[in-house]
Length: 118
Image (cartoon, rainbow, N blue to C red; front, side):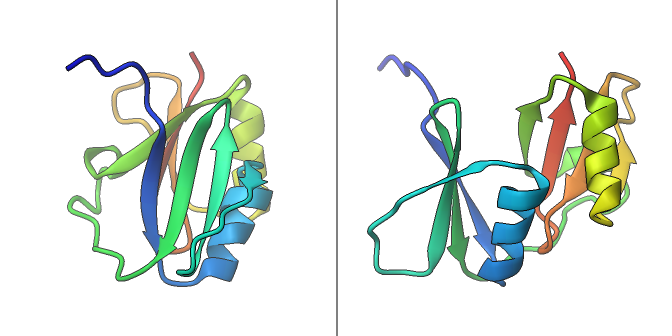
């Protein structure tokens, strides 16, 4: 087997409207069409998709260090601008414990998102 690239990540959310606001408005991901019959929304960045699906959301494994939980990581061009955007929307923020240029936030259901400036 040779894996050639990542296609998508599925994220469970309890409130689709709040999740759509976070992923579409706060993070600024582009929404793509979907024709499935269960509740959800698809978003895309450079050919990689985030599939939001309504379901039971598991709790964090490590509430103290968000990066030690399951998470999705995105690269950003300006980490300070990303941080300001998150704060403007009252999103929680945690700096990376490693000291690298990265922050963690959580969507309305507590799913962890990493934003790194490479």
